[in-house]
Picture 1 (cartoon, rainbow, N blue to C red):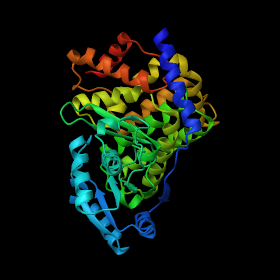
Picture 2: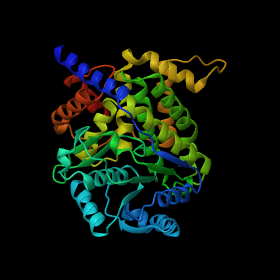
Picture 3: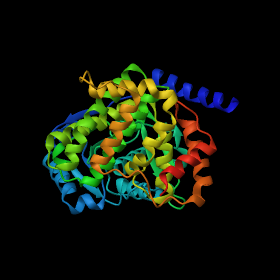
Picture 4: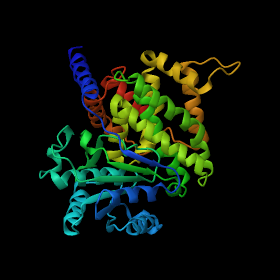
Length: 397
């Protein structure tokens, strides 16, 4: 169809841009105690006062205090902004921006999951770009270099520490507004396993599936390259091996460290190769029903892979081979990968259906999902309205 050619032309343009435009990577500090390496490096840059962007939960458990103490030990002052909520909205960004200027900060440090990091990215962009968030939304619209930004992820899923994207929502409609620009990549990141050990099992599982979705969608993307496939495979192998351990025993520092690296690799993969229908489903289910992003990805991943099976069978077979190697009696196949994925779901308790999804919302969701996917993602197989509605019905209890 003509419109499919138009979509392909647009996503091919994105692929060309990924080749031509430099995509920065943050300076990475990794391992137990890497928080202190990060704060020392920030001080070495001559910065003086940080806006610490986080959420109230991390303040209550004392994690924000640990970060503040580390920063102050390196001679840095800190202003605490702890108003971030799941799926941050424009007003949270503007509140953080006001505190940045009122406290005379010269840099931003995000502590938390994707919500804190995305909120911090948009605050940093707004510091130097004097225009509304809506005018920064879309591709390459952050014209001025943002305020210096550093991040400490406390979940292993979003990959926001390495991506060019940030997503915030309109406060009234909760429609998500993505900003995508290489200038949004943080300068430095610390993947400190000491700050991951307290993550509850349910959040560990859901955020782990978020990272897995990033890696799988990047691998099957029409814009995948040898580089992005290598990062995807590394992430997928780590997740299948270490996510069950991290869910079962949250204090397993090796599993936590490996999952942090898996999330990082998956972020590197999808930053260049992009995503697909799973994220279009997840973004819109999350906006409509308040579903956590990782959980929403978990609902959509298997149905979308089954739908796309005819076009991605070679890629899934290759992933199966990467997981099982040359095990005697096991032949790699695309179906084997799907079976192993479903087995992982069962092992860590990932839901495959939800009672929140309402049949009366189907037409609205179909329109939003297909619009997001077709104009943003290099999907391997196009889905029509009827097929999209059928997948929603499969997810709905």
